[in-house]
Length: 287
Image (cartoon, rainbow, N blue to C red):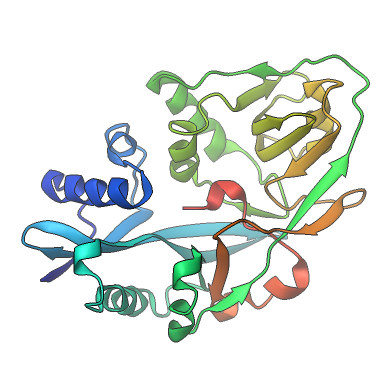
């Protein structure tokens, strides 16, 4: 048994990691790597037995902007253990290694856990936390003017990565940069969910769900009120829901975010603001 980390350029180990991720979550990170979007912010910590990855906890270094101040935190994700190697304490071993490496280097740690491990993370000092989302009833007084930008080739992906990096925060609690994680979504699950509004000179990632529009993120050089750009989807949209916390919550309805088999855990003094501020982690910041 060996504990290894930061091996993304080792083809054999990376393929073994991908095999376990596919088996556990149906995810394959290989194209993300080959396209150049797996950067230094994403670091797997893994246990190797007999030449293959059998357990993993990945670290995502994340910067967020809250009311103009930068907060440096880490997110844990892709937590998995092969069924044949469970009950050996591998997850605990990996968690302890992560905490040792990042002691004094981060303001806090967060993760999203499934229901089967809700008793595991409190053993490491994590506490359950709540998120709050914002939604608004609306009526557009104009025809649809938004344009879909298909994301099916690397040339377009690379251009969009630059747009993400150059954009201002779209909400009160927003990722700083983070194009690698955004491109993970855009190149996989959201290739048909990127739009451009010429009137606002802004891009957004959004999903239409009947008369509702779920906006995951807005990317522009100046701040934009999300409901204004939502109106460019036309008169069919009656409600806009946000995957982030807006700068101005006036006119929005506050709701507690509840996602099946998903619980937010926080650890660290850097999250002391969380309970009182009624925030949510941007949906594009989930790893």
